[in-house]
Structures are given as structure tokens and as C-alpha cells.
Length: 324
Image (cartoon, rainbow, N blue to C red; front, side, top):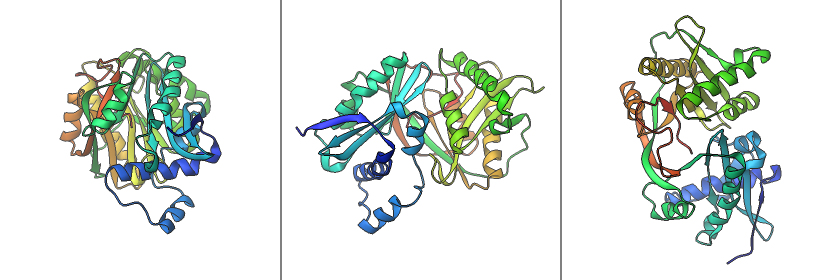
């Protein structure tokens, strides 16, 4: 076994980690590696989609790399959503596959989850890969429902009232809004809190967060954290809804449809051409609502959970996310 060391990811590692992520996924999916000149050009420009710099900037304490003889050979990023944690992408350079590097990278992630007091942890992986499932089962993650990664072209939509942008709030009101968002997600699953991502989008200029209000504009009934454009988790011309949620209750189906229209209105206002979002199929009403508005699945993976229970992925929950 090679002498691998695991350490926190540093800013100087970002370019190499960003190069390995698409190489590892592309190799697994059977795509040819980029030519040397293409790789050099890509490393010198802003990547179309970026899971590396954005997640490191959001929480540098939750990113780790594997190093061999001074060379970076893999990385992993953990995400803290209050009582919920997930990790990804976890990637290892193809030249070093099957050498237990993934297991080594996961150990500090499990320690981070414990320090955060996470009560439910998960990940998104390839449903068709016994190798991936076996790795994560070693850490007591178990496959449950599929997660569909869906998209639709941006189209004209009926006007939707009662929504605003987080970026339009005065700075003095933003913390109070984050507390309101925290209360909303806490009603879905105790302790669930995506303030980290709302702040990251705002501070890194990755997109915006849609705030959906009730009929008289006094109560927040939903929100959606959206990335758009190159250098984000969306990519060129896309609006990626990384997380969206509606307060549970009898009006949730109607409000979820309003939230989807508000996201499409935002995408149109930004001149984007497509929307992307993930939904766990355990939340089948949310999945059917996306289908009804013209969303279609592009690919799917499986959500693995620790402990082996649904968390907030069950009927009656109107949430968009995919744990990638």
C-alpha cells in the first residue's frame, strides 16, 4: 500500500483538485481523458462547473486531500447542514484507484460529522456501481431511494407574485431571514439548516436565493438556493437549484408549484437557458410536481444514508436537493 498522507485542503491545492474531479468521474463513465493542451487550457480558466473552490471557500475546515510523495492524488468535501451532513465529491486520480485511498479520505469526514453533532448523514453515488456501494457500506451508509437529476428549458411562465431575492435584503435583515429559513427547514427535519449555502451563494456571488412569501407577504413559506453561470455548481447558461424547501402543511403542494415558477422566473431574468435540480424519489409528490411542470430526468443516482432511515426523504416533504 502506498504511503498516503491525508491533510486539510489548502488554497494552493485547488487547481489540482479541480483537475482530478472531472478526470476521475470521466474515467469512471468511460469518457476519454482530455488532451494535454486541453487540460492546460482548462486549468488556466474558470471551470464551467466548480464543486471544488466553492465548497472549500464555504468551509475550508471540511475539505481534505490525499497526498503521495508530495503530489495530490484525491480529495473530498464535507457539507454541514445543521443536523444533516453529506460529502462529495470524493475523487481519486484513476492511476491510484483500488488502493484504499477513498477509505482514508473518508475518515476525517466521519470525524467532522461527529464534531458537528450530525444526526443524519448521506451521499449521492452511482446506483449501478457495486464498488461504490461497498466502499460506503464500510462506513455504515446504506442505499435507499434513487435521486433523479432533472432539467428543463427556461420558458415563459405565468406571473408569480410574492417572491423576492435574498440579495435584495438590507444587510441588517439578512441574519433574521437566515433564522426564518432555519425555522422552516427545522419544521421539515429537526436541526436541518442550509444557512451555510445561502451565505456561500451571497458572499461568493454564485447566484441568489429565492424567498417565497405567503399571500399577504408576512410569512416565509419557502425558499430556493440557486447557483447560476460559469464557476458555480450550475455551469454556463444554467440555473441549478441546489436546495429548495416549502414549509410542511396543507398548502405545500400549491406553494411548491409557486416556488418552481419563481425559480424559472429568476432564471429567465438572468438570461439563462435551462434549469437543473435533484429530487429524491422518496419524496414522490415533489418528483411528480417537477414532472408536471415539464422537468425530465437526465440521470439518476442513489442516496445512501447513515443511519439507515429516511431522514427527510419521505412522502409529504416538498424539498429539492441531491447530495452531490
